[in-house]
Length: 138
Image (cartoon, rainbow, N blue to C red; front, side):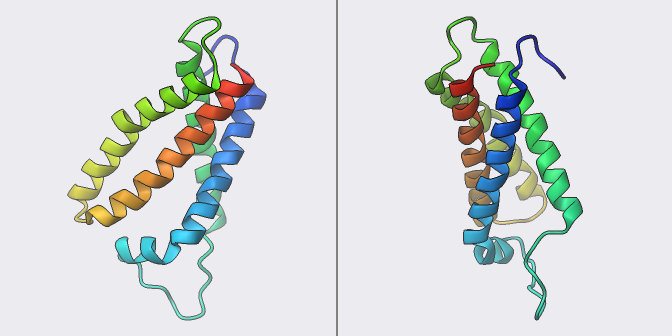
């Protein structure tokens, strides 16, 4: 999954920044997310995800940043800008991330509260990645 002209530094920075955005976001909304996801907190248990979950998240965000870089790069020469990076990210979020969450979570029996929390996270992730890739170029 390599695109001609991919700026790998931008991809890595975008993925790490998105990972940190997620940590801050769920750190702030953790209690509401756990309630919406129907997860019972265990007494004295850490709310920290398992290392395997963190690694999976980071790998997924590297893949997402690479794909977003390719999508932004396809706009053509001179079109890789912060504005176009953010717009591309917003379009991909609305068309794929938010809709997929909504469908999957309805079939899983979760309420809209979980979808709104998770979709908000992925919106921030996409916008962060789009802005960084747009600023740094592909």
